[in-house]
Image (cartoon, rainbow, N blue to C red; front, side, top):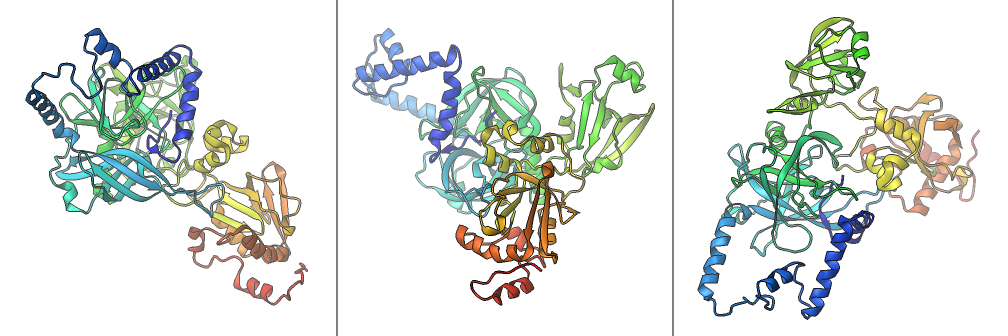
Length: 590
């Protein structure tokens, strides 16, 4: 499943090639599509280079209406009739299409492998729209459309001006962003869209936006294929989503999806691609959008979607249910682990059987009733609430049924799926580069297949690890920059740091504090796989400024680390010691 439908100008080849590779590996349909493209090219050559879409030529020839592009087959048709027809068509589309805008964004993403640097800025285009919520107008698009933005501009349909936009809130979890334009002329004549209810299966929908393939607005139609809890790739969160069979292409991100009444029933945001997949697009439904906007009204920001922080198991086995003392007719899911950073950790424990959530019974497969004749994952009930809300869980514990009031929270992840547009943290000692692991870091190191190509130890923590405290991080020795002090360690990279001088490391800040306070002759890092890195403290002090000069490092630690009160490396006393050493002399640990 691919997110990020911004039409990347500087990376259009990189974005298109993987899709073409997947299409060429399919059996029939992609080959047929390739054949149609070839036919279209041949038709253009016969027509003297006109870029007419494939199929249009055949249709006109069947009717005996072969004519050059832009010229009506019957030139004697009254021009006023054509003008009236075009005017009538435009009027029918204007009430909702005029509220759709094109979003231009300049991104400057950090280099997670070299966290003191940033990547080259790139441009993207996507879609957005003006809507009405709570009596106020709002300008919405996707979060990944303005990810790590440095400048955002929007342009209305039929207007040649671009207006500077300000990002008010980014909901990374739900892939929605709220924008604002200060120029009052942008809002003149705009009729905000109204949000509709959640559609039903087989309801007709239309996707409107500015996808790749042209500069003007585009409309594609389809039906609702499925409604269920789906993974949002940008935020790695499981939320309610609508699957449709209408085409969603690069640039459609952030565009509205309309129902038959002309109401906005969701926001286009991602698609499923592959050799055995056809017409599988996903839409953020209005309940999720309303949750994001309500959260902004309540907090002037984004607090996210709550979760219980459970790892649970289905109880479809009769033997398993009998072993846990479940009576006939009782259903539920088995709690395997509880995230210690979750507010539910004070009430739930392993081997509890969760029977219901707020009075709604949970089935053995973890689903709950959803509308008429449908079922959905019970996490849908949790995502409808807000961080800090109360709920009641009915659980079976050692044969006793308990009613447990629980305050919902947003548990921390041992390896976070995103940094919420923050720069990555780093800390450098001599040539040793330390950083905290995140999914963007793994993707930077191991590519799009990081979920399988990353080291096994890190993957285990990614999929099954839970932090013992909210500030716990997986700190790794990212790489070793060559210098005399680090001679012999150059081949060590992406190995977790477990201890420094015998003290367990909680997070990157803790490691920096331990190093800054080190008064011993040697610095020792205990790594995963029982590897050990030892440096002489004095030699590390002397090598650090040389490393900074040779590799063009602006600082030995990231900006967020430098902002920590009292944290400095090297310490002023250590810097004074180095300044007193004559040129050419060597500092030796004693």
